[in-house]
Image (cartoon, rainbow, N blue to C red; front, side, top):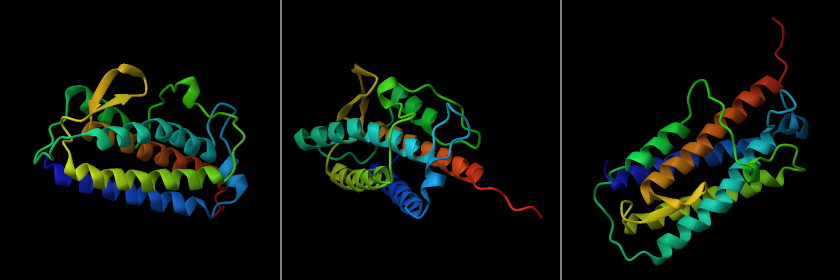
Length: 186
C-alpha cells in the first residue's frame, strides 16, 4: 500500500473518531454510565479503556518518531504479526469479546465526562503524530507493544492496530448507547 494513502486513510478514520467522541459530550450522565450487566463496561469505561491504551502508545510512538533518522517510504508493507493484530482489532458487525489486561480494565472506576475530553485530546495528538510520520519510514521504525517489551511492530502496523482498537470500542459504545435508550412503542 502507498504510505501516503495509508496515512491519509488513518487520518480520516481519526477525524471520524473525534466527531463520534464530540457527539458523546451531548449525552447525559445516565446514558454515559448505563451498563447492560454488572460485568459490562459503560460508555465512560469504554472511553477510559481507550485512554489507557493511548497513555501507552502515544508517548511510545512520539519518542520513536522523534529519534528516527529514517526517510519516508513510498510503499508500506505490513508485517505478518502487525497485520494479524490490526485485523484482529478491526470493528466487525458482531464484536467478539476479548479479555483485557487488568491495568487496562476500567470496570467500576470512578469516572466523569472529563474522560471524553482526554480521549479527544489524545486523538488530536494522534493526528499530529500521523502528520509527523509522513517524513519517516513506516516500515523501519519499530514500536513496542503494550503486552510485551519483546514484541515490536512496524510504525504503520502500530497505527493501524491502535486506530482499529479505538474504532472497535466506538462500535461498542454505539451498541451500549442504543441499548441504554428505551425504544418508543409503535
